[in-house]
Length: 320
Ligand SMILES: O=C(O)CCC(=O)C(=O)O
Image (cartoon, rainbow, N blue to C red; front, side, top):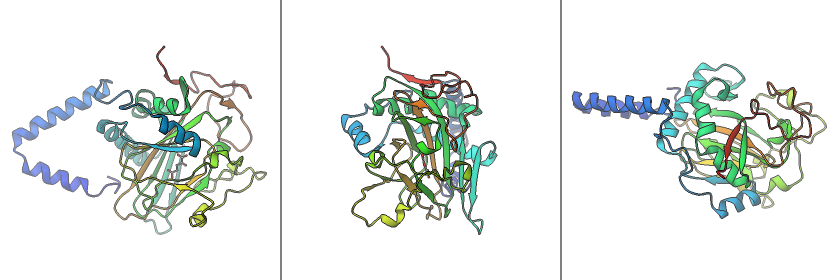
């Protein structure tokens, strides 16, 4: 169980030992039925948003460059995606970054492009409320999918998420690229909740990219280093925003909003965040040096909208 939630197995064990055998069989059949129906893509999970994105949410996204949206995913989504993320960390293949504490006590595991290999991620990305949330907050009638990224910090992991903006990592320019960060565990600032600086997407800054493991392929030395804003928490010039989150809550942020996170100080609760990036509108292709290389993108034209169905598939379109 990856020590991501040490309590729940114990409770499950106690529950099973108290139930009569016939009832256990019945429950197991129901559970298997639910899993089968989910795999066939039935309505067991909510496919559309559970409540409309409000004008206040849109105004907060525009003003602060980040907003927390709660309660748009039912429990099945959370179970499915949490299991998919844990599975991914065990398998640990592909474009993985893994920072282990010196004493081996904690890990900061990060991976990109799970959607290319794992149908559970595709289902969430293309057929959950996620894409619609991004579109509604950006005020767009359709969005394409850019990529997914997993951020897991096991209990006690000391690795911070360095302060950064996302756009300096990416072969894009534009405002219409939103990240939807789904909490799959309870999250507090102390257990490495992401902290944002309100309004920083409008500072006109473009800070040098920094990865958790210091990969200097992203280091464009012509760009200014992003300060360590953890040292500025008492500075009244900055409005720091962070939210205590329940599984299923999402943070949606603009590509230039400055954000970072501390280590996970909890000794029992792991922290899983799944970030999915959607783009549309004014986004243009900009394959600079020191940015992510996207497989299959060779034919895309710099300065144009990359409306390529294979590389950046359509994820959501408003009904006419
Ligand atoms: O979860 C984290 O620690 C970082 C998240 C992040 O930087 C992102 O989603 O862009």
